[in-house]
Image (tube, rainbow, N blue to C red):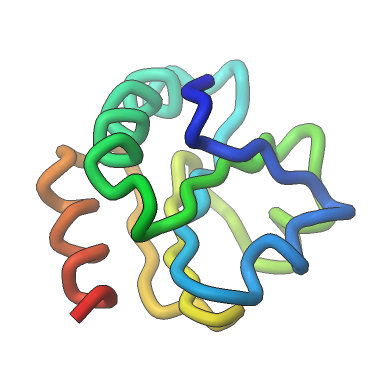
Length: 107
């Protein structure tokens, strides 16, 4: 995992998403679309370093967090601003779609 992407779990998720803009990738090791999205997520993380916090949550290791946000399909990206969900992207998407969502929140 890229050094500028945090790995969150059930115990630290809440505190990590309370301030600023955070985008969280809900994924699992066995999920092929998740594996395909990983380098795209890392690329966007590099481009937005210092502006947005990038994080990943393994749904198998953190089932409470996945359940709380009703994650039914993976990969799912949730975009938080000061602890509130402001956007959601589900499925394997190009970098441009993630960037457009981030740019909208950064305005």
